[in-house]
Image: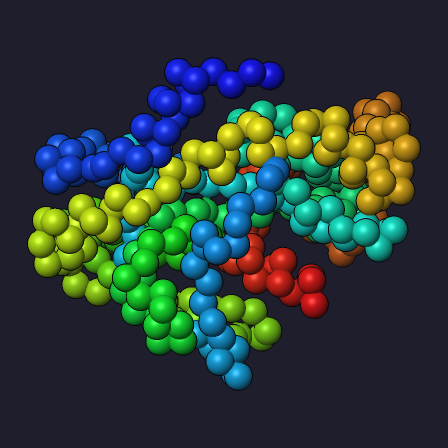
Length: 318
């Protein structure tokens, strides 16, 4: 396909645009409103050099001080959310793919999990739990201090993080106690540095002791702030439709991983549901007790999000 030079020039200008102090100050209130709303709602691989990663010591612990940056002019928010499925099938092969639910579209694994859960069978629910959707977030950050890698200091990276750190950001934006003022940690003027403290707890990274410091500007001068924020890269490209496999491609991979043909486990779940609708269900032997009838919740309401998707992938890779 021939290159559209006008589109290319437009794209190039967007990549090299600068952000002024006036732009930053003007967008602060609007941006914070969008951020708090998004916080409460809760491919081609990118070059790893774009991402900041903590370096662990011999005990598996790590620390650094970073600053979350405001949104890039091309983005709607200063972070993007990505849903992922990662599990091993009976073939020994792994299914590790971004979920199309990130795009607000149907994804075969979510549909299969919903059917498995709705069957009411514990064996099917266990399969659904293993295939559960995990959540990660990506934002632009500025490295204030990285003791293990001083060369990172003063540089801007993308940073992928999980539920625990996301909750800490949300807690600053919507504090529990009335005497605590809300803080938009992405604000370059009235934000706060974030001290990441990662410890190994039962073999997994734990961020419970991480903290946000006092409110202060990103840099000592307006010029310094502008210099930093103009190093940011847009995040929307990470969740563009082109970065996701099609529904059929994902379904084909799932069938290969699970060693199924056609509809596979989904067909089995549907068969169970259909049978349950026309035949009495034999109750498992349980101690006698009165149980109040409850509706089966939607699958998404039952999912447990992973605290650290990177740690999850690292663990299965080893």
